[in-house]
Length: 301
Image 1 (cartoon, rainbow, N blue to C red):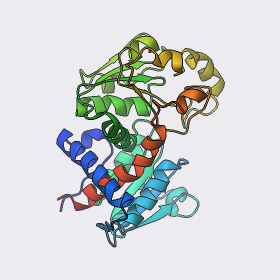
Image 2 (spheres, rainbow, N blue to C red):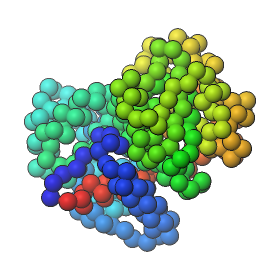
Image 3 (tube, rainbow, N blue to C red):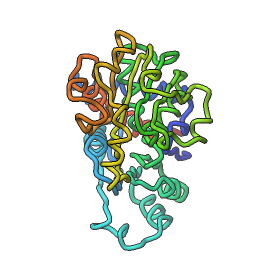
Image 4 (cartoon, rainbow, N blue to C red):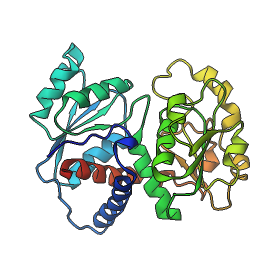
């Protein structure tokens, strides 16, 4: 069996991503109906979280438990990771002890290096470049509420950081039109943007959300931006998602945010609780989509 990694949405074909969403929805039905689905009985994952996490950690831990497996948490304080052991050594050692490694770190090249030296699947649970696991939940949530996302219009308003990059990759893989509004100096990686004709930069948030089926934002100061909060709030203030901005979208628009949200900054308090907001369904779907991902990686030939 050859191993598969999930460092980016581009590591899967569009057909495989479609299968993952369908499988996530099936696993959700099984879980909600109380049916046992221990398809990964005896499997073990090592989770390396160098950054704080709520949704990612809980979804992977609970998800693998529901599938019959076990997650072992490693960090720099309780392992050799914080004592200078080379990435290639850790990757090769863990490859002989566990079945899967899940990594959350700012340095995307660290995840790539780990995957290159591991003989077991590696999942990118978020880096400063990409957050592909979140997009599985986002697409699942949209399609549960509105049907296929192919051909739809999506607006991303805010920082051209890891979430924006993953939305660009998602537009390429699922075939929707992405309009991105970011302040000057905070636009996405130009190579990632140029990788598809399905994504474009626009000048204003109002232009981005015009006739949008889905509006997405993220915090203005992500992990890795410590100390920049004050400056960023001033620059991003015109990019807040509020009722006035959503008024320019379609009447049945959905709003998403990967959470945690800074209420009163990138989104006002009332939009988070608006009927058009599906942020909690989106968060809950992290469980089901990540279960489908682990199953896929551990059973793919």
